[in-house]
Image (cartoon, rainbow, N blue to C red; front, side, top):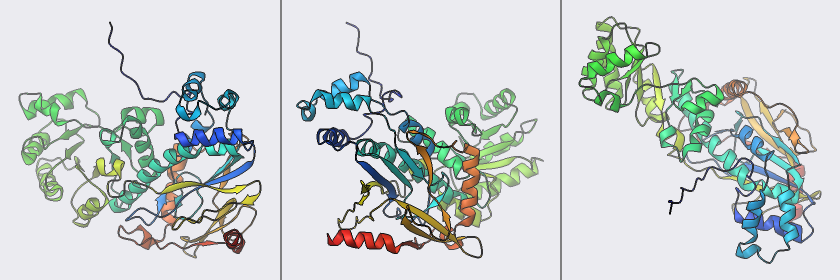
Length: 450
């Protein structure tokens, strides 16, 4: 008997419908059974509170979320399998047949990718028949939460780097292969100069960045032979990893390569002190043009320390700390029902209060051009400031072309320039003002009394 092939867990792009929580499917089936499936509902996605150590977030992940939502569907074999689960066995088969025919045909409003956002502010709004709007919850939370987490961490690294180029090196440390794509894209949006993820670079046009591993050096009889061979094979943009054995001896060997290589990378030890010593060795060997790249468990705080010491480092490779956002690895992003058939809906749980009705957000700027407050209103209100939510999907189709990755990146740069200076500090308190219109407050009070 032939062995059973391994089970592959990459989702089928033509069958993303059940890539969700079981209770979403149960609620969807329940809405059909109760005759509620076509009630017009509005759900909103927002962050309840910022993760520890964060004073702002960078909104990311929208393009991939929208692309998948517009293709959401169930395949016949998926519906058949669901029908055999204990909770679904007694359902009328016609309900599951209707789920198989379901497509998203509602509207989606969202802030632009790359926008700096804050807790309590609506980031995305879905208005659609109840069954379809419910369907999106898990997918949207997963699609937006992780990229936003990484883009926000990347923005903090960018602030700490003070203009020194940053490179995303995290593919091997991501929580699964798919996360590597999302992390590379999110980091690039927030200002990283390139990625080590080969396929992400190819698909999205992000500059590819790569050096060598210690195993390359170990595979040769000498460090010098390994460096010479690598430089001969890859004469353009050659970066040599110099800390396999003794870092400063490695720098000496790299400095002797002729013609000169482009850069060396130091991945361990006292990066600041080693950078100073490496710079001296390179300069003494007429290699002033050779750059020094530092890597090895770097985060925004370590980058800030190295910059404060004026260490002669020309670029930072950031991996594990970025793609896992180790210091704040979870984002409290939620997706809540706010309106049903024109009637406001609220949640009153302690610490989880929501405001009713579909909303818009208006951002105000001070005389210096920096953000000075967000004002959340009902969607049918107007207020001073720039409206942040724009329609992306109308009746299940793109309402307009989505921005390119380069456009999103430029928008993020402009947004970060608008953040109040005190919020850009790594130890800043999350004190950005967010207010709610009197109409929203009145709606909330009325529903609470009811």
